[in-house]
Length: 376
Figure 1 (spheres, rainbow, N blue to C red):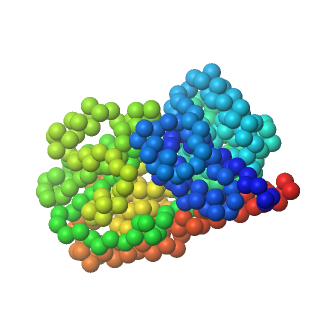
Figure 2 (cartoon, rainbow, N blue to C red):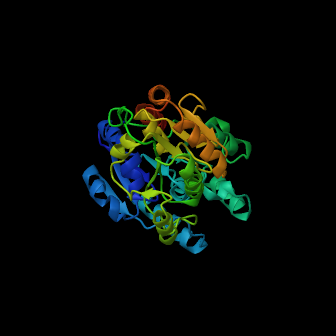
Figure 3 (tube, rainbow, N blue to C red):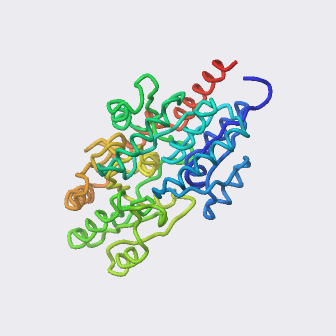
């Protein structure tokens, strides 16, 4: 690197995404002589933490789930104007639209791009015209990318097999990683078995299946608690609406805990962490729960199966199947405390061995060093 710090742009579809998943990367970039610049929409819930990062931030609105081509073209032009002015050493993209339109803009200016495919979203869960459109957009956007990072081998394989990206430029990293010091192991809490689902309130996260499973288990597990923690996400096409959530709470199906800036107390109070998602990149809620020595219950889908080893640190169930989920939860509830603790310890070991934040950060630093070498 040269003596003057070089800017590196980090772009996501929300400031919340940056402050929750990329703080460690930002600190490492600063430590290695880069100047991180965040491009993300204004997010009232994350503004305090965003300011505390102490880095330059450019607020750029994004219609995350909209399909208006004119709106998306304007987003592409906005990225291009910003990147032309900033001339960063690299563009780091997170989430779908920054990955697509940010990488297209970076490629048009000769700026190296490193997109991180953190999940494939609704378009790849439901085949159809939208999937074909998004596939073509990804193919164009990633054509000039320096390297494309995937959070699980299934997503990487799918992109390579569909010739969206060449195998030589596709790399799997362990999600966004977990700070193992911040998320330290906590003993199993005494009292009734408590299940906790931590997620944005989206249908594709399996929220409705979780609620239905809770209804099924009320008689079988009369003392059990079924908790839901996470924000309502009205900007997503599969968002759970407030009225539906209120009905679940009023009937006593689940306990809604709202949203929080610090999930650790809730993870510590839970007996097991649940995520019946339809598909994931590498789910942060499972990684953080595992880091805190919590058994996990999740669907047998890409992303989740990377973290959950059935019968070892939790249980896997069938996707979009409330009965299968209920059976897995009941199976866990019947375990003696010693077995629950053994599962939790296995979760912690798995994260220590495979999903440390340090591994992810080093992958970025190595790629940036390679890019700097090529351009000097």
